[in-house]
Image (cartoon, rainbow, N blue to C red; front, side):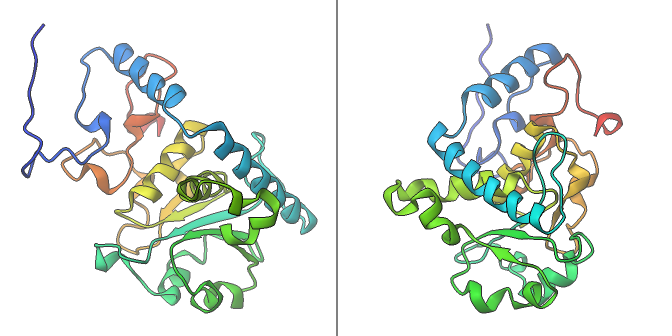
Length: 241
């Protein structure tokens, strides 16, 4: 067999990217086999999913008490956001809470519970526009007692956040954040429509609603190639988005 070597240290071939952006199989069925392999065998530990499941159940029970229902797959009931702040290098993607709310307000149902995965330190004041609009907000830190976060590996916290956010009815993430990207990939694995995924940045807001082939900006978001049609011998396309 021939070995194709890709220099990975210099632009534009820097391999900081999703695996499916650099590995291509001319036979769709073989490519889909390896995509299923990644989905089914390369995943978070079971303890992480169990902890996240307790939080999801709490959120859904609280939502049902307000008259909201889950979907046929047992997801939804609440919606979710990933708001990347902190040391995020893409400064244009760090928008204010007022912009976040203005850019996403029509996505949320009236008084819908929102779960927010974020590295913002001042959750009490930063997210005031959402609270003022009538939304009950929850963060991972609200569930320390429920799941015993203090006794868990601190490296698991972000992964628990990802799983909880991935089960929301609707999701709005941060463009160019691989954290938001993986939430969308999980949603794709679950079979959720990308029509229910947005970005909080206005220019990129609807980017997940259209099919695009993977390009050199690979890591900026996740692409349907990772999950679309992989349980059959089907190549991803706009027709099955």
